[in-house]
Length: 518
Image (cartoon, rainbow, N blue to C red; front, side, top):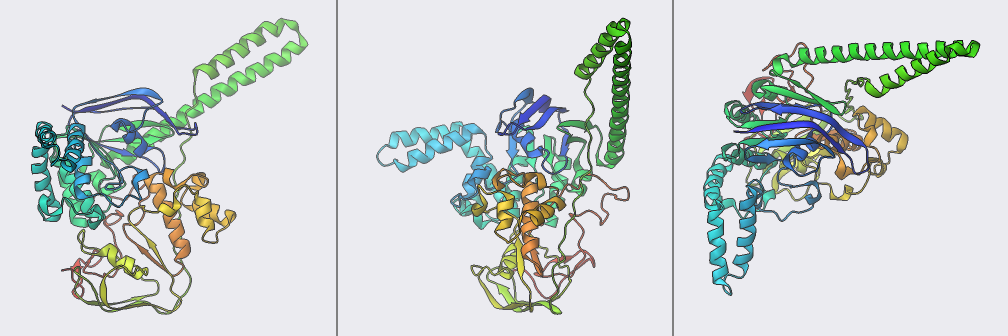
């Protein structure tokens, strides 16, 4: 049995500002509930509260059943660990295990260091590891590693976690959680970094799972294929649509219409009472006989304001990306017999000014390596030749958020480093609706707001060429009227492009024949 009950939950930012207030919903046994909302409204924070990483300032929450958690930054732990590059794949697997197994692993690691001097202690640690379920967990991890990366646990356990691509890390974590014994799963953007095949796999796994799942996603196809109910976080509170994503747009319109009617009723009643007070005050100046009526009118107005709360205004989110760039020559990029060592066969490619090129392929085949190389990363081992066109300045938007040099710095300070003064910087941030975070340290931003801020920096630097690995996902949860599951308007599936590096051309439905992945 697995259920989640959240009742009147509230949470304040360290500075005292209220982020969540009166959040209430329930996820029943076997439900797959999608948690949606605009950028920065507190979706990841809400999952952290349910997971126990943060302490709520008000309200209660109850979880029945064993809990499994996949945080948004898989492989990076919490946000303060972004500069830690020493983690192994075993560390990732242990972070997904129940706390007793994590504690037993820590004791076993300490005992192994002194095994020669204290063999009895080491034996006890091994026994505790088995009693906690460590050996059974290793069997599960071995199966999941074979499914995710095609290698047994013994072959990859001690490898640095960074040797896996972002998609491989995410797939491994999902395999462990979905095949584990947890009754309740909290998944924060589980589809991020996954390739097309893995996204289809995730849709099937979530749809067929008997676990109780609460997840955050901005992928409309994933929501349409898997969600049995949708919890919307907005205006510091929440409301629940009891059906799937197909009926969500109509339900949200009805919800917004009801809020508008309630606001009109509230405003009209308050205005009536204020007008009554004004009239009684005018009459009281003429005759003292109206003084009691004035006090009664003032009392009614005061009680109304104290008892009733005006429904909040909900503003629709508007994201306005600008990636225009300056004019260059006809050729933006020329590649001749380029080969990424151990990843691809040699291939040729020419990209003209104005092209939109999608680089697709399985997780771990070298897509991010390819874009890093084009951005000038000399650590990417390769052979062959590539060159940028005249006047082309590249900018890389990487799929992870590893920017230790930005820690402790505000967005305005970061943009100032790129010669963007406050006025234009605020305009750039306003296009992504993160101008309210202008003076907020980078590491405290939500995942999507981090992507948006990095996208604004990349688009400013890359006046002529922008390379993006897993580009920023804004809140696409508000379904347009014309959209249907499987239609090409879904941003997770649509590409209008030529292809490189053995990628699949969604526009033509064919594989590019020249460059192939090994």
